[in-house]
Image (tube, rainbow, N blue to C red; front, side):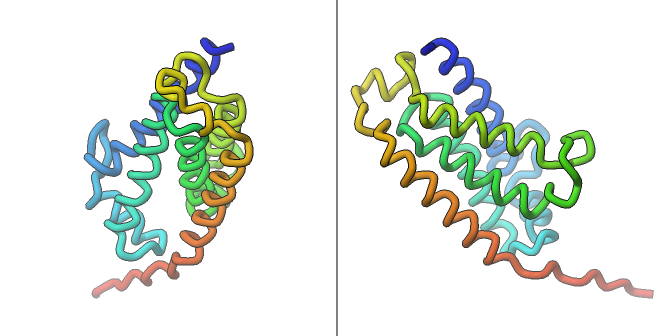
Length: 169
């Protein structure tokens, strides 16, 4: 079981951390804070750079914590928070499937994050190596996910209507 959890953590954590690195550092073909910030502003998140860095930190930090198996459910909760915002701002209107920009991948990431959080990070994790067994208490994991959902909702409420494009003749 611990090997399966390790593989799941490495795949999910690595992929999500890579997305965060695109936003934070411009690595792997990403736009960095400036390019991602412009995209965030087009979605109504202003100032765009602030929201780009925040999303990048959520993805990079959540992914890294999950990959390392550190902090119990904190990493998976951060992943869920970012995925919820992405679903409701970018993907919800595009249908289910990722091939059309839909929310399929985001919900898969959420399912994997929930499974990892409640299964625990396994024997091959920093939580296990450091004896951090208290971070796997189900009550703490539920609190982390409740906080993530509340923060995602607050983030969505912070969104403004995107600025109208003006065309000069």
